[in-house]
Image (cartoon, rainbow, N blue to C red; front, side, top):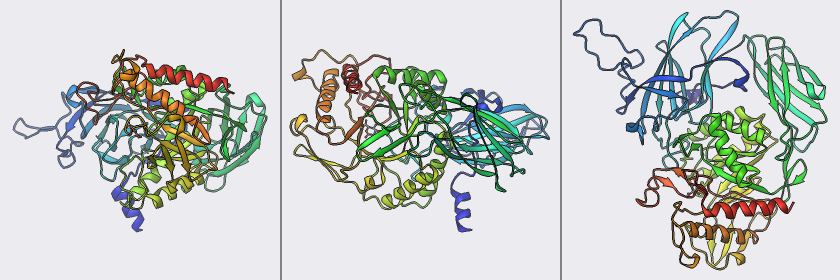
Length: 589
Ligand code: GCB
């Protein structure tokens, strides 16, 4: 009882989105939406969503969407109106759409993502709210639709919250707005809400999963077909609409070299849905990472969800292709999608291109773990992240946190609990935490954080050469890693350089020059040879990206300059060093 009160008072009450929305009957609500700024956050008590029309010319009125500016949805608001460039606050969005009541089907209002919180109204009725800027959610509107014009209003608020996820401080631009697709989705009265169709942990031919129906006719016959393999599996859902799936087939396995996907059709008595699904196994055994039972070295790069050229939040398929092609060109077999779940099209495109994906929760640095809403919020985000992408074989790592600090009240308890839940929801993938609390003194590196006990990878962020000087030869760094039986992954390293600051002799190169960054990359690569159990590296970061904390007036001007490529698509010298290293690693196979 108490729990319920807390949830409705504190966090989202939207429904978790159904899976595989792109394959559903839908009408897009993308396009132009009217907006009203609400910097003073008074829209709620002024009842902006009711927006009364004045009857007489003497009627006082102050708020109106009539004559209001329009913005593109999907899209962040910061890059669309210059007065919103660094805005963090409330913006009200409005769109009027023609809809019709339907007797035999159900209709849902779906949002791919709204950063950070959303209050959603339909025809003056509040449908509910959602918190968390990077995962989808929906509301059922079957019985709320009017024939004809329907008004949808969304209050979007990207203000930082002390108990938000992320919290107050983070090193990327807080792009607010309705940043991903909006749709009306139509389904059967009882529809396929979710399914999990992936290989059982450690197996190369056994699928272990489940299906969940939503609707009154919960007990139904289910058929799963993979026509290319002549695989047909039949089962029945129970009175909760749930059935476990278990079958085997001779799959051609998905891998970066051969990103094979199969058309998988799931049929019930009332619904059917098709998806493109790949099959692969991922596991760690001792200090090895095994993909399809073969040891791999991970050649990754960090990516933020920003189109550097457009200087906006990335959202389209073209944006995804730009970022992923660039990662491919660098020589990667994995992308770390930092520091929050990226758009679904990034993951689907990476999968088609043969890039493994590291997907991450925005549990970043200064999280208030001792706030009792925080574990609930993390939990919800975890379910939403896994819920959307659990059938994407490209996703091999769920990363549950980045740079949290041992000693922060309740941190270990909260993150150990989260890890346990993650493994329960998805027992088949690697789970990790990224940590930067190691010590580096006298050229020796001490990795000790107890959270690593719960992580499949020893994922280390280190910026030797940049935030901390070398304390000896890179080729002589000593490692004391308290967890000797796990693979080590350098999840971040790097240095800043402003593209074009160059032609300095290497021994005189100083901060911000391309040569200085290049040298740090060379040193890092030398050091990699000293790391026991090293099974992958991931430079920070592919492109220079916008961040309010990066305000050096000459070199940064609002950009984190650790990109291997500038925001104008110019490759820095360090790019070539990394590219050569990845080529070497490729040849070592
Ligand atoms: C880090 C963070 C990353 C930052 C990066 C930096 O350790 O994980 O989000 O942006 O360092 O540039 O300092």
